[in-house]
Image 1: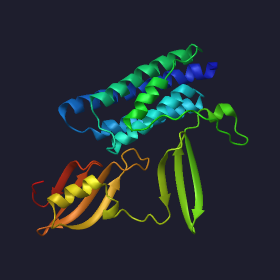
Image 2: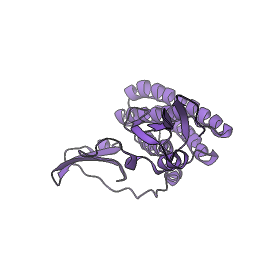
Image 3: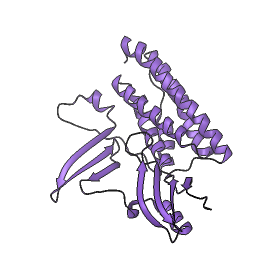
Length: 256
């Protein structure tokens, strides 16, 4: 049950975040209809839901935290090109906006929250996951009410004399894995769609450097930059994770 502090502080702030998320969805809907990409709107939508998840966990708003976490996974998959941005996907995301509104009304009224299980199943289906049955989680010294809003688990360990870090979501899915010898970004670690397009269009190019950016500042790569030499020209091409060319710059215009 909520207290005066969450009702007066949490609900208005959460509503602002949900409104921001809704605005970004409208931008994505317009871009989808126009057949263009809108990576900034997608990144902003992801950041809004990430903020809402943290806010809900802070104020022990379990259902809102759970829905936010599920949405965050779907939006991350969208950013990585694993899920298509189409009308069906947008329908699910807009449904989440309506569910957040209902959950906030229930939270403010100190009433029972409406069920979000059908929506969670639809969100999970977007990324090809089957929602597992909930199982009890036990951590020594951690209250059950806190466990109810935990959404990420991080493990750091040493294996074969190397340091590793793995991050899990609440369902046990690994969403981040790195080791101390990952090293710099190389051709072999580029997304297949990026490498396929580049090799098909610039077979004789010499790659000079490879870079990447995480638009939201959270470590998830959303753009890949290749500097290369072709016909005595130095060029730079920027790709989305799905192999879509976002820009091409160089001394002279080169047909893509």
